[in-house]
Image 1 (tube, rainbow, N blue to C red):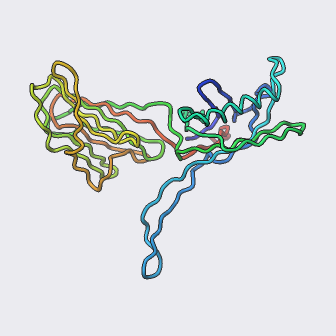
Image 2 (tube, rainbow, N blue to C red):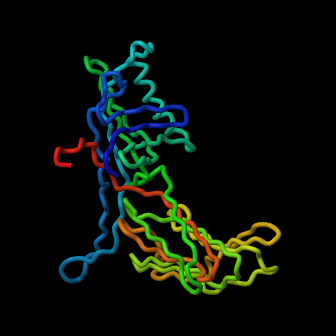
Image 3 (cartoon, rainbow, N blue to C red):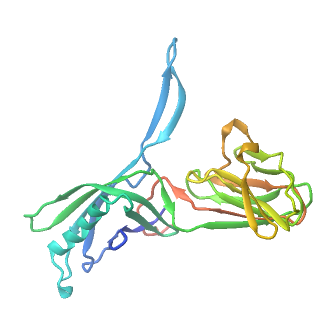
Amino acid sequence: MIGLKQIKLNTMTNENTFNYKSPSKRDEYILKGTTGLTSPSVTVNLQKTLLSGSFHTGSRADEREVTLEFILNPDRSKGHTVEYLRDEIYQHILAGQNPNESTTLTLVGSVDVASVECYISNVEADLYTKEPVMQLTLQCASPYFESVNVKEFTAETEKSGEFMKFDIFNPGAPVGFVLNTVTANTVNYFGVVSETTGQRVQVSEVDRISPTPSKTGFTFDSTEKGRDIRQNYTTSSSYYRHVFDKVLMEQHAWVYLAPGKNVIRAGSKVSGENAVLRYRPRYWGCLLYTSPSPRD
């Protein structure tokens, strides 16, 4: 994610805004500095061998810690004081005490808006300086900033016996997606293939439905919180059934969108089939806003 302009902290009842680009004297929270907005640290697991060296057994992105340091600049015309602004920030601490509520850290960029749930773990406020400064430390369970915007792509069968095709550019980190297909024809197969990563998932033994449905299709969900495959069908009403027990998955790997260009092929290889693929880009981090150089 590039071109960071603004940071927001939100709860269900409270919002505080910190301008990165050209903060004005009217801003009540003037940002001095941040840490933790670029790529998170990664834990690399190495297994020692009997000989020299080790071999790699896996890596994982760690939880993200973000700090915000800012000046309190109350708007006296509104009757605001330093104490009032400080109490506004303290509301985010209370949010973390409710298991059903958290603070949302939102990054407003030049091309996208992304957010992550977080919890305040530390507050430092110097009460006796001429320039009242606060520093917040935020703990984020996810290493990613997830876009608030859903990207949507559509496709249809061009020729019976062939998959539908999606050409997708993913601007961020690897991410799962949700694919929905529908057709009025009988289906006995469903598959999703990434020509970019080589991953493949297929359902090769689809049970017949009686009475014959007027519409049928599949939902493929490879997001981290979803991870499901089900068949949807319409007879007198709309129904669905999970078909995960019939799934053949190479290397137990879900098909996902890699960073950059992706070619995804999917469907039941029947005529008259349509599909919609949706996903939210997620980012490792962001760059600060910079004005265009004279060479741009």
